[in-house]
Structures are given as C-alpha cells and as structure tokens.
Image (cartoon, rainbow, N blue to C red; front, top):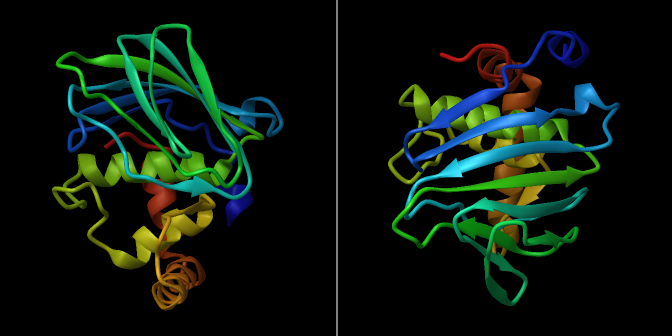
Length: 191
C-alpha cells in the first residue's frame, strides 16, 4: 500500500486555519531520492507549534520575512531574515510568531522524511476539514498517535505508560489501514 500511495503526485500547498498557517512544499522526498524535505511556512501573528523532537532527521529553520521565534534546546532565539538555526536529532524545539505581523520561514529536513511530510499534510487537512480540536490536535486519537509515530516525532516529558498507550493506538490505525486512508485523502487531494 505504501508504494502505491507514493507513486501519485503529492499536493504542494496546504492551509491550517486553526494555527493560521499555510505551507508550500518546495522539495519532497519523491523529488530528490530522499535527500531532504524543504517547505516554506507563512505563519499568522501568535501562531506556532508545540515543543517536540525528532529521532531520524535534523531540522533547519531559516527566517525569510519577519522575525521567527525558535526554541532550540535551552535557547530561545528570534531570527531575522536570512538567519537560521538547525535543531539536531534529539533536540527539543518549536517555532513561534510573537509579533503582531505574519511571518514567513523555510524549513529543511535532512535526510528527508516521508512520514513528516505525511504528518504535515494530514494535520493541515484535518484542521481544514474540521477534524481537529481548537488546540490543533486530531479528534481521532489513533490518527494522532500514528501521525507522531510515522513522523518520528516525540513529545518531551511524556510518561512511559502514555507512550506505550500511544504506540498501541498508532499500531491499530496503521495495521487497520485507517492511517493510510487518511494519508491518501490529504496527501493527494486538497479538500
């Protein structure tokens, strides 16, 4: 099923009305044999994501327009256009916009992560179609767990029991084909 899904052409532009964010993929894993994933995000004033880390790839943030707020490890930074920072594998990080204006920035994963590409497309699609809560979490907890697992994204300070429960939910969504259906819905169409 995975190979069939990724032979179709992926949608490049996505919008998340909950966090006031739009993104456009510049390069996907399918474009460069998995070397990297590159996308640009336009983020509304007050927008941002939650603290997390990745286990398989590093993430570089480059400010394009406006001031990009970044937490990387123990540091909180405000990047001016053309400034960048890389969150190494295993480093807690998040981005935010604490200004009163929209900002734009570029993100690059190295190596590419099809799972993270899917996570963004599914998360934005769920938000766009009313299938996420007001705090941008998918309403379906199995899909939420699968998104994190497939993107190799971990949340800091989660008790081991909760991680085990999330893994069981993710495995259920993946093994039943439910997650593949959601990926297909949002990776290859822009409802």
